[in-house]
Image (cartoon, rainbow over all chains, first blue to last red; front, top):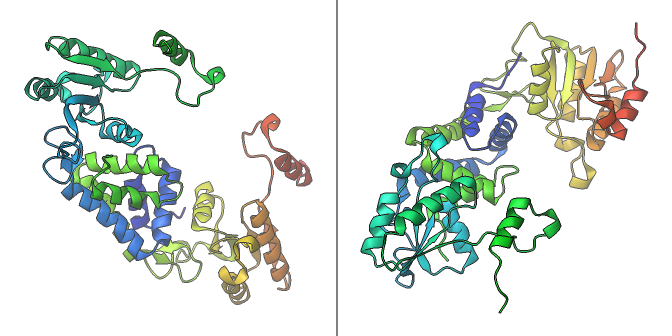
Length: 201
Length: 201
């Protein structure tokens, strides 16, 4: 049985390490690279290497940056007293895209997950507590995902931060997504929307 | 609004050029590379470049190869008189995985598609006709996909090859896939299975 030449198999295997990429997709990506221009292939290879050499976590909040402080931490117009706690940088970017939040961030690096052996010491919880105490933070918005683990992480942090005097600790609202069809919403979302209902002014 | 640092955006854009990769997947891939080891990232970059420098089409059949002739063409046990015509190398690999075919291949490089402006001159049709005449081919198996364009390509080639004396031209059987549930099969597949029915011996 003939198979791909070794170099092609090597590339398919390298693509398979990307998240959610199965054998079919990895093969399609490899064939695409084979058929792409040398410039496009080199651009992808160079971009991979550049990201590894130039990008590091912001030493203050954990966001990606190519300098010491990320663009949010370095922006004097962003209010450091309002701190939004997210699990991952991608969540930070999602909140940025909404364009509503003018405070700063803290990236935990994950969620608490006893099943996977991930405890507070595996996240940046210690650094968060330090920042809250040292940077005169007045509100912490817990913006972990509304999942079992995200909720548990938020609850854990809320208890920990409850000891800090005059600090407001809030959680992103859970409920129906904008434009949703009530008929198609799942029970948990509807329950969250009900329990979080607000008076119309 | 804060966004990813330039190097991360560059990598996301490079990943987006892969087939079927949208903004979400490209972002996940880029973040994976960011979190991967330097060795894994370098392996992917190197594999991309190696494939571009070492792999070329087999000068005889169009299969991928890192030498002049691909592993099928170079294998003296493969019967050159039986020629299986496929659209793409991935189709050749699919037939190889079935482990039944002991002849050789010809890769067209696509299908006829007047809507996309792809005519016979854009495929390796001329080289196929030459091979059939020069290499004492006795059977051509048209193994383009059973789609509108694959069928049209097969029909076109069958007419062209009909002029070659003593050449048998066949088409892969269309019908119910192995293990299929008749109840779930689409009308076209059932119609093909009916019209291609065979007497049980």
